[in-house]
Amino acid sequence: MPAQALRSTEMVAAMPPVAVTRSHGAFMKRILVFDVNETLLDVQALDPVFDDAFGRGDARREWFSTLLLYSGVASLAGPYEEFSTIAGAALDMTAERRGVRLSAVERTGILRGMLALPAHPDVPRGLQRLRDAGFRLVALSNSSQAALEAQLTNAGLSPFFERRFSVEAVRRFKPAAEVYQLVARELGVGTGDLRMVAAHAWDIVGAMRAGCSGAFVARPGAVWYPLAPRPDVVGPDLPSIAQHVIALESAAS
Figure 1 (cartoon, rainbow, N blue to C red):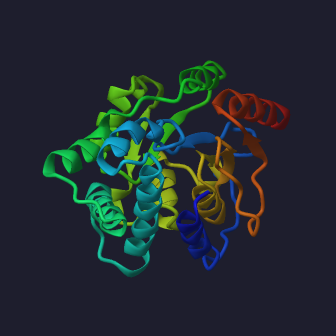
Figure 2: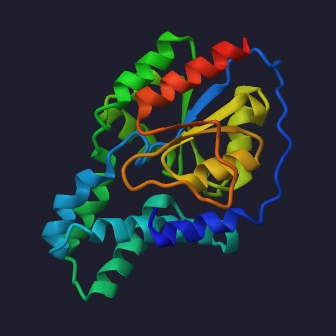
């Protein structure tokens, strides 16, 4: 995980842990809550656009790390702005840091590209396996509700999810506890009845400290935060996560 994103993870360490309780008994399958950007959708698809604008594709990683860092700052210090607005500010910061002058067309093209990201190739197979096993699937994103709906629709993933949640309802970004509590409240369950599935350690750490279980998708470049307890499910892609989750829930029933 990039250094700036790790700083956002460090912010979570100050949050007090919440006791895990199951509102519907120990034998109900946990509802699976999926992060969207980088977990389901491939943000690396923007690399050619960044390469054209910046001359180097690694600018995309710097931009996304800056976006995550300052969404955390917005939660901790305010003021709240939509994720897309912070994405634009992070893009301007990246350009200034690198001495690049982005045209309006380039800037708009990059930001709109976030709405048309493709799913990672393994995602439909993993989601289908979980659906076939009887799991309830919902999505949870730092993006606005409108952007989230557009992203999942454009990637062909909307039919997998019974609900799609945006942080804009509580005006705090993940990993704030209020975000995971929102999902539990809307679904009529406790946070202990949720399992957060994400490729970001900070997201899993925040969810677990709010009382959820976690499943860490260790995609290339994603590593676990060593100062937090590891979740009981870790895998390199969504099919492996599905296999572990199904085995765990079957053993508990």
